[in-house]
Amino acid sequence: MNAAAEMTGVNLLARHQQNIAASLARRLEAARAANNTRLVELLEQEQRQLAAEYGTVHSSPALLEGLRHAWEHLKEVLTARDELRVRQWVDGTGVVWWYAQDPITGDRLCTHSDWELMDWIEKHHWND
Image 1 (tube, rainbow, N blue to C red):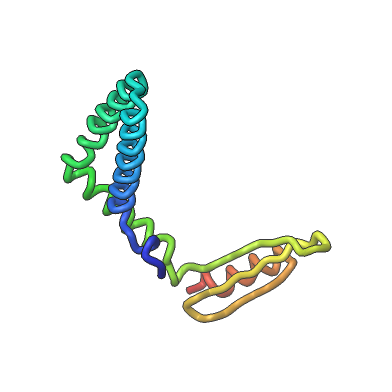
Image 2 (cartoon, rainbow, N blue to C red; image 1 turned 120 degrees about the vertical axis):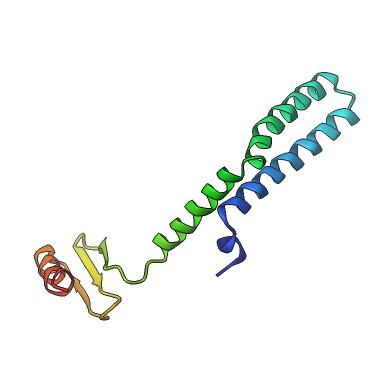
């Protein structure tokens, strides 16, 4: 698993905020170097707005914990390994195909019949 996938939602939010702040600082530095006072004023106003908005995120441990909990739940849902998997696709001739897999038993089905799929699901999954 790559490093980006392992980052928590809180870390992603913090990284996003850091990127915005860095970009804003570079733009502010360029505006000052060009003696563009109007742009400096606007960028400083944006900086104050971002500090006010993001400052509340950093000062709220409950919000950070909520984000961490939500991220952990999302990871569990996305990596569920014991759920029946069903996929549908259409081949080059326009025929609809179904693929089903029960990861617990290893049973699989590939069919173009939705009736056969439903029968397989009833026999292999709902009767457990």
